[in-house]
Amino acid sequence: DARVTQTPRDKVTEMGQEVTMRCQPILGHNTVFWYRQTMMQGLELLAYFRNRAPLDDSGMPKDRFSAEMPDATLATLKIQPSEPRDSAVYFCASGFELGSPLHFGNGTRLTVT
Amino acid sequence: EDQVTQSPEALRLQEGESSSLNCSYTVSGLRGLFWYRQDPGKGPEFLFTLYSAGEEKEKERLKATLTKKESFLHITAPKPEDSATYLCAVRGGATNKLIFGTGTLLAVQP
Image (cartoon, rainbow over all chains, first blue to last red):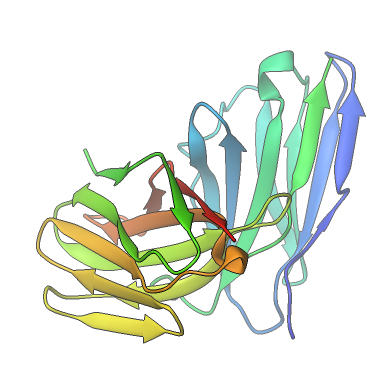
């Protein structure tokens, strides 16, 4: 059963440090989405890609967040510098096409102290 | 602005006690309403997609329906393993963003 793989599973870091989260989408999927989940806000869309090209990153704080797809098998989300308010679970999801259902990874739980 | 509202926030049922979860939405030009199930510590798992009013989809004890303003997820004779958070999401408007509601936490007691 094909799955979206996210690493690391958990990350604890101090405020001001750089954080990099990685995602391997399902082979053959050409869309990748990054979401952030908190108890207060639920799932918030941060950015998404189609065929490795960024389509929308309006959900991300531009000054500290960046998302890239260096190749078709890897998507990254970086936070620099990290802040305590960034603490959340970050999910990556992929789909065949923009209208297709998304398949989610199990997330990276980020704690910034 | 596109919006998705789910109710109730939490629901406790006895095993076998059927009920429904609600998802109301505001979107210009619906291009799909999606239901997901999320277990603790896991990512959301896709259940159904509905595209037009009147459409229905079924899977085991779950049945999803869609009107022009809302969707219902009906759970018939639930079992404890149906306990999870159920998320509704819509795609529409001028973008391809998938906007999620905050979910309904379902607990089914044996």
